[in-house]
Image (cartoon, rainbow, N blue to C red; front, side, top):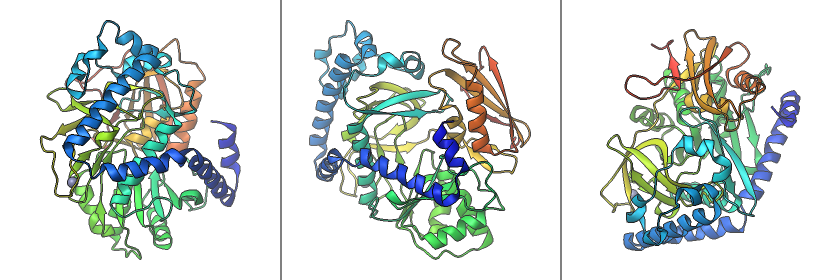
Length: 454
Ligand SMILES: [Zn+2]
């Protein structure tokens, strides 16, 4: 934990709000540059292109991006040795290139980074197996990704930064020692009320609902499971809402049909799903007809095998190029490319992906898989795999398969600190280093084994 976090944790709430907003204004500076506005205009125009024109554009961008990776990233230069890149003219030829998996990325990450002179930001990702990965993203790429996200919301009537939103995310905005029932902070820079996803216990949920009624958000976004917890409480208690949001935009988790129905019933508005990852995957977004569109300007999806696993190639990864990357998510790609919403593009039938795994903290709050994997994101590239086992609510056993050359002893403390922020002070973590973590008989690996739920 850094010095700024320590100062933050010791500050009064009004100061914490100021700090959150300052961070927001700083982020805005790097996210909303000239390139952002230029790309928004492009995206608006792109929606009206014909399918053929979009396909051509995707092919051209792909060839450009592969060349970029070959010339700028030592890892890809080595990987593509002996392959005649001039034979690759578009998506159809992608199979000439080898597949890249997470372990290849993690163990070579410094060579994967491209030699660009542009400013980059680092993003830490936990991923579905708890493998810690640091990816670099150029400022232009993050502006493009932001523009894509905002454009998607705009299609449904929500204008980012002009309208109020509530976000449930994995940020540690509430210090572990806080006694007050104020489980949110306000980021003025984005008109965004950030609500903690770590304090949604039965005794606290009423405070969340009251705050929602006072804040009256135009949209709600972030963790799907957290929104469902709130909605479930509202319905069970028969509470009334004093606002009607324009839309709900869940991120990071696979959404379930029951959950979607619950949210739409309780909040009285539509839920629009999207897919994009912190590693920088291309986008899939839901349209007003409820269909999932591949945003072809952002990259390529391929079906990897019969189990619906996908490979992604993302055009917004100039810092850490991802080409035919086995990201670990599952989708079934559609054969249809026309939709009644008026946008023609490749489509996705369904995103199956991640199971709704979670652990409990001592207070009985569900800590979702996204937040659990984030426990390890601050130990850069040193963890191969993690398994967390829970037998009683106030204890978690963490088994770590580590990279012995990169792992430092003090990393255990970083994880414990992070754990305390996520699970609170009443839940204990026991860390064990192991040589190898076993897969299940099915060949699948489970990051979370929750024996409390059975
Ligand atoms: Zn559509």
